[in-house]
Amino acid sequence: MKGIAYIISAPSGAGKTTLCRMAAAHFPEIRNSVSYTTRKPRPGEVNGRDYWFIDDETFDRMVAAGEFLEHAGVYGRRYGTSRKDLEALLEEGFSVILEIDVQGAASIRKTLKGGVYIFILPPSLKACEQRLVDRGKDSPEDIRKRLKIAEEEIKSAPSYDYLIVNDDLGRAFEDLKAVMMAQRAASMRMEGRLRELFGGILKD
Ligand code: ADP
Ligand code: 5GP
Image 1 (tube, rainbow, N blue to C red):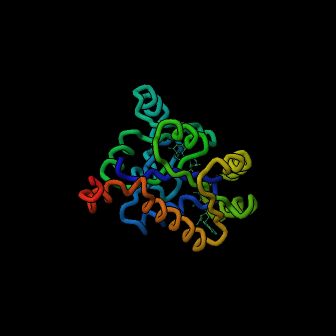
Image 2: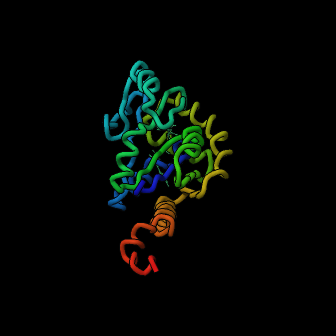
Image 3: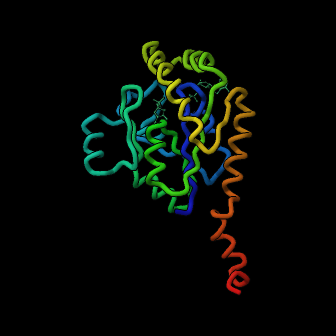
């Protein structure tokens, strides 16, 4: 695969969607992967941009056909990453952000080589709650469900390659950009470019 897969997890309300959008807007070679979900769209969400919104039957069919690289039940709904969509983007040379939960990240770790795992931490659970309330798109029942699971999710943070605290958004984005730029220059990813520039010398 030519591109880099960034696997990004966080408790709900930590700000991962915001940061992932900023990264895709900043780096022309980065795309956000569009997952499939049985969750209903929130106001303002667009099919094919935010998610592919599908029903349970379609989700079952895709699972049976092996179309998902990973899939998981999160907050009472189902979410999955299309194997074909991801591989096509990586083959084209795009780096891809997969904004997925901790179960999905753990399962991808077993099958996908060379992924970069980033966990976004909120400054506190209270801040998460406040952000979800201010976002104003989830019911109080949904917010309660999400916060209850946040503690479990945070327990998985140490297994990620990078932890970014999203207290001040600008600062968190600087950290995310630094990680992405360092990955871009990592020697294992520069092999092709090195060969392109100095293939002759390397042969000696
Ligand atoms: P997630 O995708 O992790 O659930 P979002 O990116 O949707 O979270 O962010 C949740 C809410 O918090 C959004 O309304 C967003 O604008 C806001 N937000 C994101 N980062 C910050 C921050 N650093 N400080 C304050 N509010 C933030
Ligand atoms: P939301 O409903 O707030 O958009 O997302 C809920 C949770 O589902 C988040 O933790 C998000 O990262 C996760 N999620 C979104 N897409 C996928 C996916 O394709 N696979 C998995 N495993 N989790 C996903």
